[in-house]
Image 1: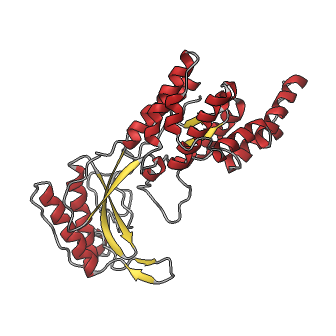
Image 2: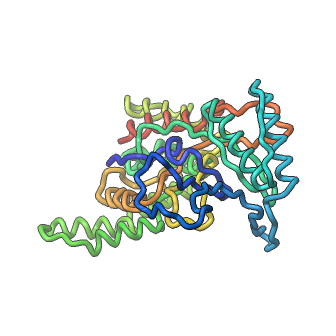
Image 3: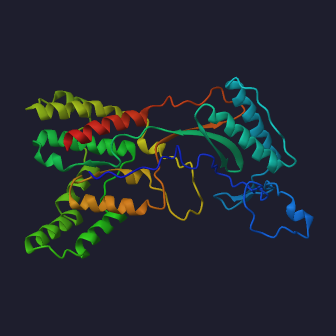
Length: 363
């Protein structure tokens, strides 16, 4: 499969937070060459302009009511949360209240950000229906593959019993983790249009027929039907039992059954990989949408055919002005928090380690 680079949210825009802040800069920098007029008639033009913290930040609830986030209650909640978290980290907390509530909240964010950065974590200031809170976060480790496209074409070569076992596994695995197929997706329509309307000057009649056949397969033929089948079908109510009782015929089947057995961890669980699709740089009105986990982890027919290559091209094109969502864990801090946030949850790391082995094996 084609590999593309990733943009790690762990290194990009580290100091951003969810609530807009006034971030004025000092204009009088003596270390820089001045190209403006030196003889200012008004003395105030020579005075550094300090950042002004916002006094109101209005938000609208789902029911249409407006509320202001810059309140005394929010300031006190954040202040007490900061002192509590510093206590848990065995750090002496120092806080500058500020001349206004808005300035005090900005100071608290900066102080809390410095605190959590010492432990290798990152911080966002977020809003829960009018209540501001500190959200500590960090990303998990991505796996070997840039895009996790799970192919299903190989099941066509399996015997009927093992085929039903694998399809059931795929079905349960997808449902439990929020993974979908490429059927009827917007980028799939784009890929088929590219194959249908693309310019193939050196193509002979045989190659043209093969391309047209591939498009039909993905539109309503073999590829589409198999993808639809793994999405809808589950042949075994007790999948672990079916896996254990299956008698392998050769070495490939033994390796496949072992991988399915290992993969049961990601079916019989209260977690899902899409649960970790946190966007630390969320923008209410973004110029470009980020590349979601749903776009990066999905089920395809064949990971190596030209259709998948076009899907990857679409992904590359779409992400030029955007960034990838990488699985992350978050931790909301309150005045009653009883522990420091750590990445003790390793579900994404285990998921990708198994997915690396599985995709490599079936390809």
